Image (cartoon, rainbow, N blue to C red; front, top):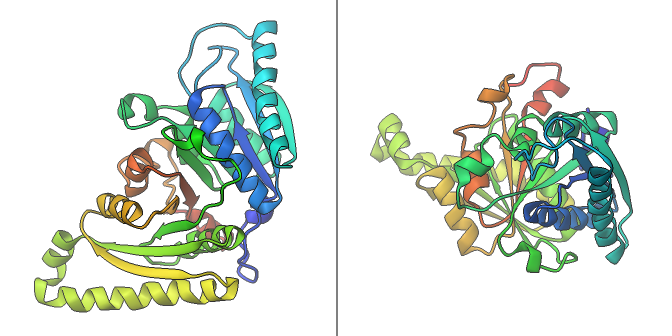
Length: 317
């Protein structure tokens, strides 16, 4: 359990009192900082702006080493970077704490989350060019894989031109149903309520696999059942929070359908659940969530669904 974002079956509204914004000065980190300030402003949260000095590898633009030891110059650079996040917070009245850390970037960020009761992490990631080279093995991906709290990843393109105080207006929650999805629903509803946004809930039916399993004749009935199940899962929570919802059942390849829906409906934030598997190597690779992070034109928040199981004393899946 971490801060106020830990799961509580009696109180499902999420609060983010502390938002971690790691920065290395790269363009993608600056994009992440803008979203971090926006989330913190929406939740009246304190930002923790952190720069990790990798003493073995030097400055790393979210995972790419340069091979220089830590020293006075690196510390001065780090101070400048975290102070730039503080200045961004000052623009709209968000409190920012700054800190320099020495160590492995991904491990240090993970430890900082647990040691400081961080509720939410915001990081930048690169665009579609050279995706496999830049995202796989990067610090951002490692944090997404292992973070016990939600992580927002933001792509570089266009976001630097967006006013930092601009609200999210249309939030998309892809869901597959099931017990763990309640946690993603809770986070999505809470964020939508804070920004007075419309919550779009989408369930994607992979027609080819479902037709092979159920037969084409039964597919229409299955879609209707799914619509009812998704509606029952979300609408009560949304009504409690006083937010507007739109429910959609889409057909197609999941990550493509998610991207298409986001483009067609002006979505500016996607929230998705992901299951941990106990080992970093198996945690995210190949999943619908990872593909969405790589290709979406808007920020993506990932929520570890196995937090729900851990809260009940069970094991993550």
